[in-house]
Length: 218
Image (tube, rainbow, N blue to C red; front, side, top):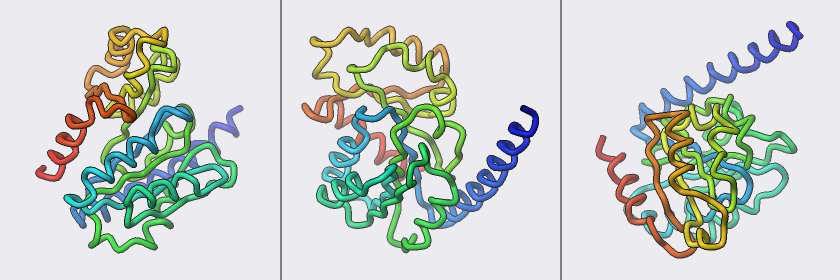
């Protein structure tokens, strides 16, 4: 058991070193970076599609789309209007790591980007341990999931700065208590900024867009 812990610490230490280098490069180029994490099917890609369509002409957005075996999400983001999209296929790994992001950035001209979106692999466990050099993590949950998600996966919510509750248009059909979800999330991380939205119906998206634009003025 001690050997396993030692190896894991070494892996994470090397990852954190690369992540720090990435963060410095992005800050030098005045790039705001967000790492989107969630369970599969919570709506990360749909949210990014909507965001690109709405803000793509105002903000120079670069995207790194992680997936286990396909480039499907990257292709969706390109079709939505993403002009700078780089797919990362993990080949079975359940998370992106800093080395993958560093390699993807080699194929990007950072002078052409002011905001970087990283779409992580759908998983609320492994991605919580890996710093990708981002400014903040954005964790999504949907009302089709349990409102106890923050309690079941506290590490992810503790290390995130923003929580998005998506698919609110389905609330009448789901056993999901919005206030309970908020309370559970804030119990884990009292500093979480919380958005409620429906990517399909468009509810709550304007507040999200305004917040993203406010990041550009910091």
